[in-house]
Every structure is written in structure tokens, then in C-alpha cells.
Length: 256
Image 1 (tube, helix red, strand yellow):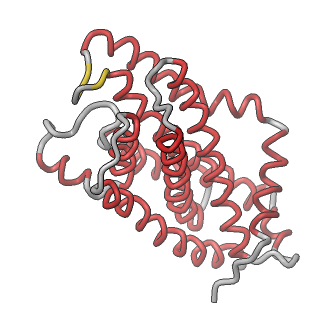
Image 2 (cartoon, rainbow, N blue to C red; image 1 turned 180 degrees about the vertical axis):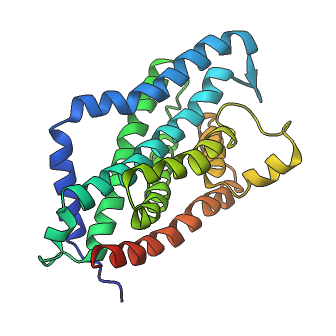
């Protein structure tokens, strides 16, 4: 039986208070790699190759980079951050002797992963805005922010599942190398997939990140069409399944 309560907020707030102590270096790290891709590829390479689908390569790339910045922040927070708090700091062992339930802990960690994704996404949006490629329509901006939080929810949940059975912190390199990296390159972030081999195009339909990139690109172009709801469902449904799986698997590990 699931035992979720308002105490999720207390777990989330504890992480926020801890985050504030290191906010400047953490923000720089969150911004660094995506900003490098945006400037080196979007501005540098973009000046040579023009664009795709009627938009500049810088805008094409920015619409993907804003999603992967959310992906990386959520993923690494709920892999390494959660593992350190659980195993090295013994925080979860202390929390379960309070009224906070195991489910509250896990949901609070996932909520914090979503928050980190939101922070990274907002930073990349501001950069894209300064570069003149970000949408400015208030409704589009709100939809984009909700998409970023959804990406944070999905990949925080996936990462929490991996954390639930990771024997040591080095184990996460398998997940990032075998799952995150291929998804990173073959989800349409850097180039369109329509000229890729059929097996890659078919496989991309099963990659949640691909659907997030499609939605983001449409929003950057200021286009909202009915089929986007199917892409959103393809993103969020696996995340909901992963969320409940994470609650179950992490509870087993915490009380073991």
C-alpha cells in the first residue's frame, strides 16, 4: 500500500536547503556542458550548415539542448545525489524513524530531481533568449516549462529505479553509457532522424527523449498541433510507470 503524504515537501525542502549552500558552482556545472553544445555547435557549426526544416540550426539545436539539460540534471541528481544521501550520509535511515514514509522520501527525491531539471531548463531558456532563438509567447513559454518539468519527472523516476539496485556508485556508469548516451545522440537533438536508417528511426519511437525533443522543437517554432498530445503521452506514460516502480523498489532497499 502506497503511503504518500504532504511530508514529501519536507524531503524536497531539505534538499533545497542543502543545494543553496553550493548554488553557484552547481549552477555553473548545470549550465556548462549544454551551453558548450549550444555555442560550439549552434553558433560555430550552424554558420556553415544553415538549418533544418525551415529554421536555423541554432534554433534547431537550442530546442534540443534545453531538453537534454533537464535530462542530465534530473538524471545525475537522482543517481549520484540520491545514492550519496542514502548510502554515504545515511539520511534515509534517519528519516524513516520519523513520520516520513519511504514513499515520501522517494517522491521527495523525484520532486527534487524535477526541480533541478526546471532550474537547468530555465537557465538554457534564458541563454536561448539572449541568442534570439527562444519563443516569447507566454502560453508557449508556460508549455515549454511544463515540458521541462515532465522530462525531469520521467528521468528522475528512471534514475531512481537504477539507484534502487546499484551496489556502488560506479555502477551508474553502465546506465549512463548504455542508456543515456545512445539516447542523447539518437533522439533528434543534434540532427533530424528522417535520413537515418530505418532501424534508428523505428527505435527513436520508443525513446521518451525523442518525443520530448519533438514537442520542444514545435514549441520553439511556435507551433502547437493535435499530434503533440500523443508525443506527450509517449513521454509521460513510461515516466508514471517508472515512478510507481521506483516507489516499490526503493522502499525495498531503504528498509532492507
